[in-house]
Image (cartoon, rainbow, N blue to C red; front, side, top):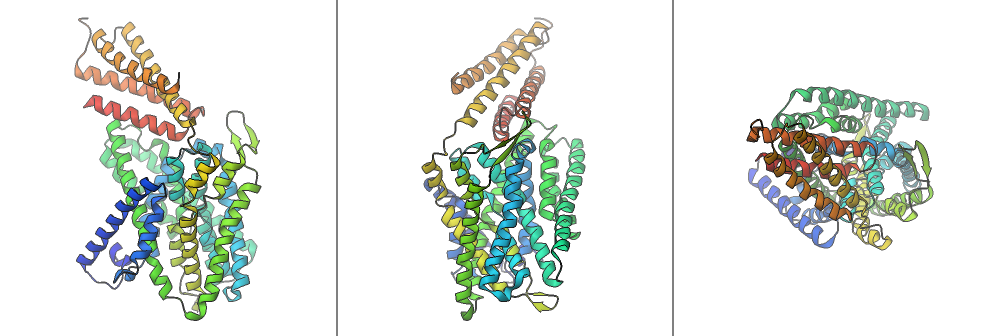
Length: 536
């Protein structure tokens, strides 16, 4: 089955129809990005709202979001890319608050929503209620982190939010699998815990193995095109075997991304690193955009699938589920101490995060496409018996997604400004400091090479002028002979050595915790761009 036929079953090979839908989605994506830049509202909000409105147009309501398309076509590359960009050092530094959110909050949300569901719709049963709770428990990082980045929120807040969103998807989907298994064959809590540990732990272990093998194999590939192809294969090489073995494909893909990340572009020329980074940036943007539009398009199908006698119970359950999800997260982040591991001092730091930053974390629990995909993947029958309240589960999930995306997504920017958690100069200062230290390292190496007569005066003076200009800019932002070979090949070789010492300095600053992973990526990209311009 092709992806198009999976998205729109029963429409036949109507190429013109698919082309029209694709063009309409492209126009919505472009318009949403434009509106997001002008209003400050996350573009995912506009995409979902536009998709929901478009679903009531003629023929558009027939477009169905097959969960297999999300789990196999969208989820692996999105999770893998997030893992690539995540710093293991920063995850370790914030391991405890991330674990509290990804494990503790997911469990608390799952069973709180399950309790509400059983109270409102007793026929759903505890197993079915746990399935609903696990579906709406994980957060989606796309919309919230886009606001954080635009307003320069504190790095710790962004790191915790991204780390939590990465891990809680896998934890929630593992709970979801346990709930479905309990529907098919009732089990004890202890057996359910063992099953959960097997699914989560096995998926993580498999992902680490795939990541190590992929990282070693990439050492033999020296061109960017081959590395790009391999980077597309890795997430599916981790997800598909894990899924086939009944393990967590999400955690397997995430683990592979975290392992591959530090060496994903090792050994490549700067221009190759730029090409791979730009490719993934465009791919992820397209996947996220199309996914949010398809989420919105499901509204009409969900409304049409409800029976008149279900409207009251569905509305009550949806309202209480939204209140539980939003309220519990706020209480959790305000009440549970934030504990951060300081790798330098090897100390536990409790209560280090200000209350206003905790409030931002509490209000950043936006739900997204993974929750809807999980809801749509709930089978119509389990062990030959109809799933109790499947339509209710799916519609409640959609209501939670829209309420958090629109309600919290449109007000998160206002909340950040209101609390004064914006405009942090920490990363700007770190970036200026990193650029200054890199330029100083390059100038020191250049002086030593001149003293050792390994480079000619003319070439050295030309390069020194360029690095001194960059050093002066960094300081401003921080507030603070015959044997000589000047041939183009020699200059390129010298530039590579100067670049290498700057990259080594940058990595040292990151390892010591003096700069964040985001700052390291930004400065590294500037170095690569400058090197590519020089090579040109």
